[in-house]
Image (cartoon, rainbow, N blue to C red; front, side, top):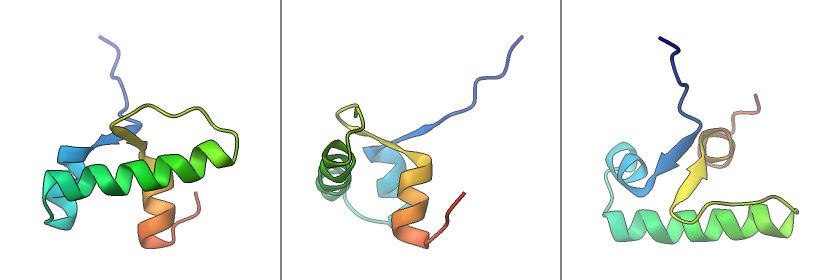
Amino acid sequence: MVEVKKIYYSAEDISAMLDISVSHSYRIIRRLNKELEEKGFLVISGKLPIRYFEEKYYGLNS
């Protein structure tokens, strides 16, 4: 069986990691997805790429 690597965080994932409400997580996702759209990327509503989240919140550039 092929292992599928998760590449997106959901609002529930972000809520648990940051210990914030799910509704606040959705606001964060909307704001960061808007940044990605302005850079020309396609986005999925309610999901945020893990790499972008890590870059914005932890300063990781992978």
